[in-house]
Length: 157
Image (cartoon, rainbow, N blue to C red; front, side):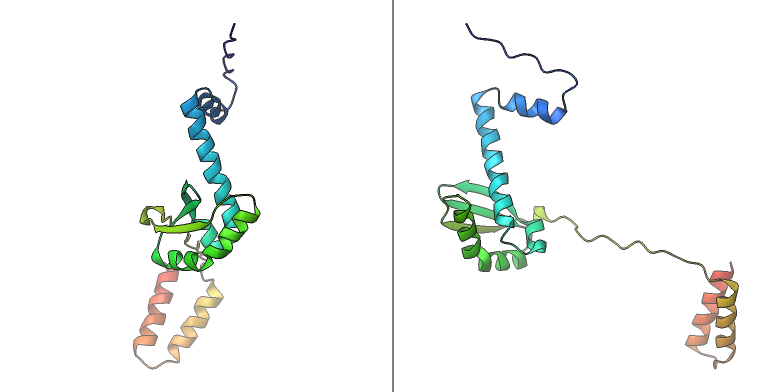
């Protein structure tokens, strides 16, 4: 007599529910095992990479004894190809039976990692504005004097 799996409680986290659902049938379990393998190889490979490259490098496929790494640009791919022997050695030392790395450029991986620096704007106080007025009054008419005048006008508004 087979037992029916108990129903998951409604309090369980959605990720836990999804994982238990995937593991409940053979095809789902294979998908889950493949995803775990990809993530494990990715974590191991990132140990051999410089931080900037590790951040954008993804394991795309593991097939036979070859792992395919995907990066967002040709510049990353060139660096990754240079590091391939080191990565293979590290993966083999970690227990993975791999002997080749192929590199793919996938522009869709590009994520804007650069964050625009938030500017803290500090308004000029009266003393600073007076200093700019003094500077402007000592200048000959021209582009610099005009720029300082615009700056003063802008900060007085």
